[in-house]
Amino acid sequence: MAADLNTLKQDLTRRMDGALETLRREFAGLRTGRASPALLEPVRVEAYGSEMPLPQVGTIAVPEARMITVQVWDRTMVNNVVKAIRDCGLGLNPSADGQMVRVPIPQLTGDRRIELAKAAHRYAEGAKVAVRGVRRDGMEQTKAHEKKHEISQDDEKRWTDEIQKLTDQYIKRVDEALTEKDREIKQV
Image 1 (cartoon, helix red, strand yellow):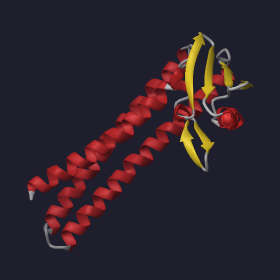
Image 2 (tube, helix red, strand yellow; image 1 turned 45 degrees about the horizontal axis):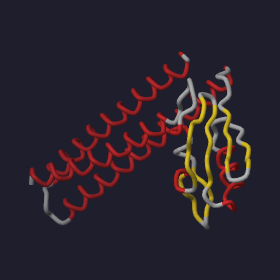
Image 3 (cartoon, helix red, strand yellow; image 1 turned 135 degrees about the vertical axis):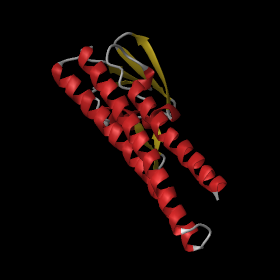
Image 4 (cartoon, one colour; image 1 turned 60 degrees about the vertical axis):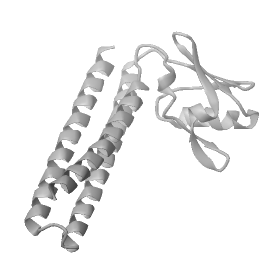
């Protein structure tokens, strides 16, 4: 039975690591000092009847320190890209120039810092929700094993305690990453 718990913990750890890695990528997009392609990577664009990540509809580049450009591959998608960037909550004001979308990066004002902090908190909350979803799946698997009499009630209690400890560790790591990002936003 111990091998089953280890297998379950490995699976849950892998999935929680994925949530933490997604958070790190999203935080990388909240560069505060200068333009970065990572800033627009989490943006989702309405394209062909579904939502797609911006890098799947165009090439993101940084031609200068305070400017990001998106070379949209399909001319019909330009307005959708502009709308997605404008509505993403980063306080950006893109403009279209043919198939090129130019996104000037504004100077960091107090309001901009607040917007970035709010975005960071949204990303962190999303990561926490993902981690809790993984915990829920683990708890359901544990209950299913106990119902099938594959593990005892004592084992179920021990497994749920282990899953909760793992969840608490990952929630703490998300909080630490958020604290660090907040500090970075305030310093710039």
